[in-house]
Figure 1 (cartoon, protein in one colour):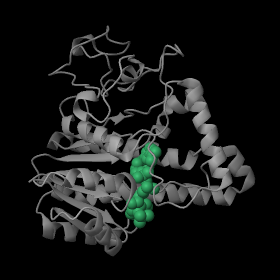
Figure 2 (figure 1 turned 135 degrees about the vertical axis):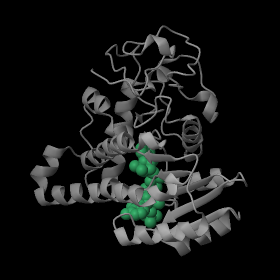
Figure 3 (figure 1 turned 90 degrees about the vertical axis):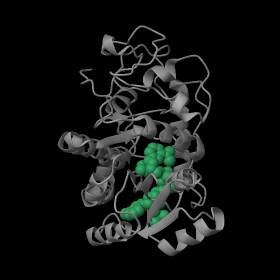
Figure 4 (figure 1 turned 90 degrees about the horizontal axis):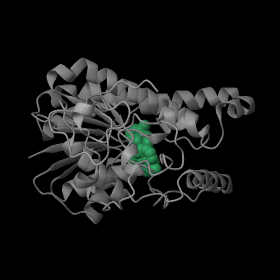
Length: 340
Ligand SMILES: NC(=O)c1ccc[n+]([C@@H]2O[C@H](COP(=O)([O-])OP(=O)(O)OC[C@H]3O[C@@H](n4cnc5c(N)ncnc54)[C@H](OP(=O)(O)O)[C@@H]3O)[C@@H](O)[C@H]2O)c1
């Protein structure tokens, strides 16, 4: 019975992971949440499945995470997949750059940076180290961090994305932590992988946005549309999680995924027909420049396959710059060091 632990399972992408994974009765799906009773009620009301368990855990509280490990150990002696999905997304710093925020409120900026790092970086590092013994006992051994395209350094630099800096910085640091974990535990066969879910509408159940937030979203969406006119707006949690599950299933520690940050499906901007600049090192880029329409939600079939050796997919175009020719993929291996 494959087992999954998903953090932030109370809502948004986390709840969608819970929903999709538990649809297979052979899976054991554990949600880690802050409010156990509320999520249990939601699960009972909306999903009514007996392969779901909910445990309490607060990422910023080490003892709470230790207790969560004990609770999970009572459910299963080993853990196949840890999906570190929970995150704090600061609204305070969402729509201004670092310079503007510092000029407005330097103490506020420091507090916002610390809060973002405390949850998104340190909380996840503690989560992973505490659950490692359970992961070690599994035969599958996959640790997945849900990160963001906002932490993609090429994206930020190339398109001048100044907003959301503390959040982006905390996720970029998380990407580095994932690479470091991989460097340490790859020898044990543990896959550590960071995945971006794309821009996803998880607004359901959240408070109405302020006018300032609405203006910020409108301006960001307009910016994306300028770079990628074909972009249709945010995708649904169902679609995003379907795509992510496909990658998680395919990803293997020995096939170029170890320690990588895959900015899959960030549905914007990377269109080298519009912009010939060589942003080539992310695996997703070629998929977004492929004019052939993609089947939506068909995760495993639809995703880039950086199966650098042993099983390279059929090449449709010549390998891009920086992609090992031996691989045969049109995409660059995530393990390939980037020099751009
Ligand atoms: N939505 C997007 O467009 C998008 C884009 C890029 C990346 N992402 C990433 O995808 C993931 C999920 O995003 P989402 O849109 O589903 O987020 P969301 O709707 O805001 O949900 C966040 C989840 O994280 C939990 N959480 C927050 N702080 C926590 C803490 N200190 N301890 C434990 N749990 C905590 C929340 O629990 P409570 O219910 O208790 O608050 C909630 O379950 C995040 O990592 C986010 O950075 C999302």
